[in-house]
Image (tube, rainbow, N blue to C red; front, top):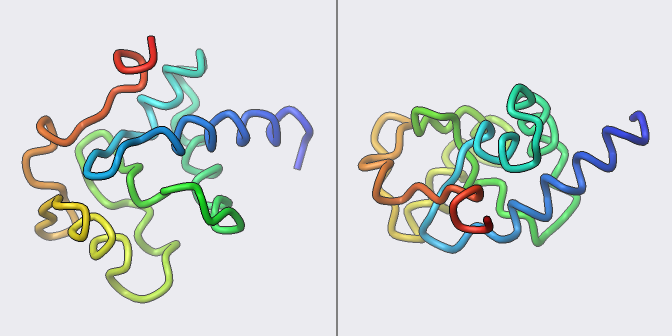
Length: 111
């Protein structure tokens, strides 16, 4: 991995660690907060590699429509959904119900 990507990934993890329990954000929202609005896919790659860190709640990062697009990167068939449901978030057919209620925008929350 290129050093600049590693640095970006670390910044992504720092933001992800701040997502409160029971809330979610999107790949794009993290990218925008980091000043790289067109790098949502790179945020996804970072989340994919976050498994080596126990303190990065990757299950709280979804796509802009609230779809659990990263669920195949979790052990078991429905682990991502189970983790979200344990935090009080309803998921139906791999999509968060009432996304607006649960959405955490780092740009607004962190300034």
